[in-house]
Length: 418
Figure 1 (tube, rainbow, N blue to C red):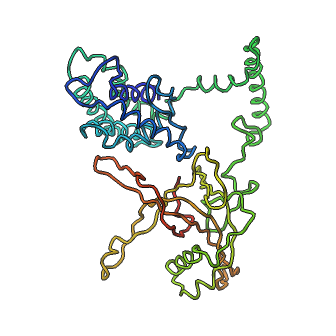
Figure 2: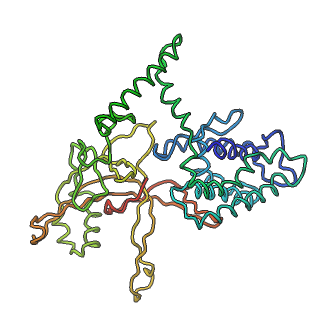
């Protein structure tokens, strides 16, 4: 990780801003205006408030003299998540943006949890082509610019070999000693006897590990945030799970019920029932109760995201926003042709989660299900008018205009992630 996020990406930023050992862009024109990059730094800094914590830390203002002292995680968030959007259209020539985007795509590919052996060849060829273009744009085959060919550029040519011999890079691109130092460093309370504090911490931890192994207390004794409740545990206190919705764990039910009668939400639910279940308008109106139960947070199981509903609680101004979601709806590819049979494809949509609520529906009892009620977990999402661009071999979804539409009611299972 240090090779790319601590060295390579900062080196690219230094080259763009002509701060790499005092070098300019030579015969090329990849450099950016300092004022422009300063404005981009402010955009990056302000984006932290609208980005959930699960997506990474806040990115500081990447301006001189110290670029905000970003960590490897901050450079990772900038490179993999934010840079394809904020750098789009900023270069004087498109080829420099495409060159950087190809690097980001390769980094995303090599950091995937699963890599097929057949894909190693494309990784090797991709890095080789990227290095060749880097030498063309930055080194320019000029011995006076030899400093641009750092060892990190050379290391990229061996990443595919490491994957072929050792497996995906996430298996070994970590630093156990650094994590261990962070584990014991927090217990240093005495400036006079710091090493005694560390020794006591290591001894106590070793004793607890022996007790855990001897008596099988792996579930009871944990060294990873033991006081934090597990969101994925359906039997934990405050977690509610409904039949047919195994992926959705609901947390923190609101004290007040969500009023439906006489509200715009009532009409949206009516339209959803008519379209999804083929009900008549009168039957749909009769099936909707005056009010329903509402929850503040949705947790997607199996390591999914925790999503907060905007409508039933106040969010602090300095809090990270975890209300915007990506959800998938089935869209007819022949919707503009009336006489053609429909063919539905899942299409990603984006918006802000407003309400999470349970709608009970009455139905006829059957031998398999004698209960005459069915619970629908529905959400109200205000659609975000996003701009999707994929003209430069990299799909970028941006939210340039801001503002939200009136909203639509969908099933909670359509939500994919934050």
